Image (cartoon, rainbow, N blue to C red; front, side):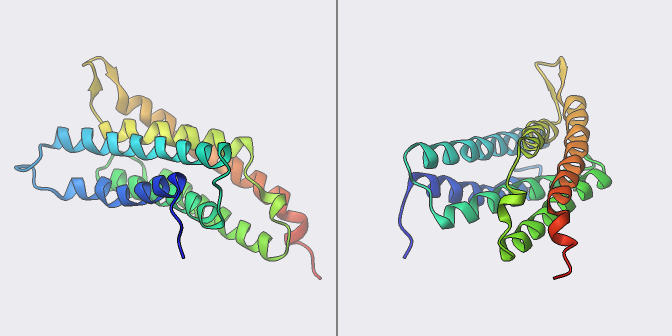
Length: 191
């Protein structure tokens, strides 16, 4: 039976926001102008990113962690980032190679962690600081690319977001190589 907790409610809310971020772009322009689609998708993504930080903080601070939460939290993050990248790809705002690198890394590292847990070595590929920096770069770049317009008519958020998503892609590759290096002795074990 599922029990209620604030962190779990925030995680479920983040998962519920995924179809909203995607669905906004399916609305006819006569219902919602493209500019407002961008604004709403941007703010929904920012709200989702804030719930990500908040649910983890609350869970650790007040001892509300759970096995389901430990499973769902990273799944929600990966789904949100992947959905947003696919939207951005369809809008021509992100390069397909960048989207492939970021989504491919998430799949590869998730599979690596699952396999390492299966052989009892999950601590070898625990989340590290490079992964956190990569996540911050992604969570900053994506809303800028969703917004797509100039902020206050001056700041080119699309350009800044594009630069940051390339930084995130480089950090993505680097963090994946770090995880593979840590796992390599276990991957290469013939026993």
